[in-house]
Image 1: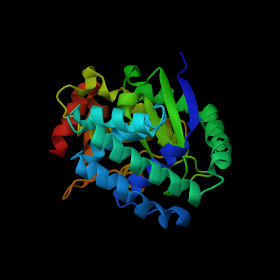
Image 2 (image 1 turned 180 degrees about the horizontal axis):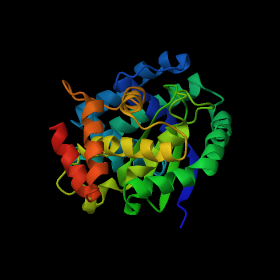
Image 3 (image 1 turned 60 degrees about the vertical axis):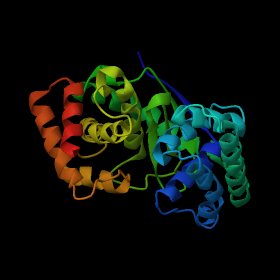
Image 4 (image 1 turned 90 degrees about the vertical axis):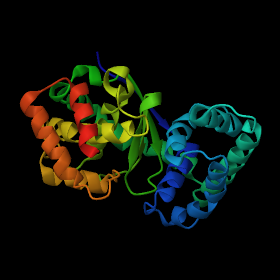
Length: 294
């Protein structure tokens, strides 16, 4: 059965995507955002710090929930509770986070006043590429890994291209976000391949795959594990090459976090070669990759 994909351009998710990029020290390619978002995101980051919220764990809830919560306060409360649970300071924390969200959203609207009209128009190029090549790419991904890795549904949050091409998988929410670029910023890595890579990670939080991997490590291990698999699938449909050079390019340009002192491309390529040779259950291979990263 074909996967059901829903496409959703989203303004607040766009603002949060840019703020997360700035917090991670990723350059903002859009000069209008580079001038405003770093400063405008400070109240939100200050609220996160005041609440002693782990940044990355909080972002993993905040960004996907932006497309589902009804209002900024509901978004703030849901994200805080899912990150650290309820506490006596919840109302204060929620108020501070909601105020930070309001300032960030206002800054985005001031910097990009026409975004509400422009963002939906950016959906068409990527959606047409996906409808033409995506199903075949996912089919190959299931063949080189396991069909159980492919989700039945996925929500695609389209965000403004703050960094000139980027995205992330939201494992807990069966959604991904991807910058709605109008053309492929990296010729060797078409955006339809990036989208398949993001979608391919979504089942990794199932107990079958995630048991034994710390929750804070799982998103990174999943991202690395699906990278060579996606490149192999893309090679089968003549969209990209699957070799260590292309793997290294993806790690660099798709901004995967690299542990200090680790040659991530060589490590993952060695892991993938072993997987292709022996084809163990993917959960076993995933656990091995987690151990290899140390």
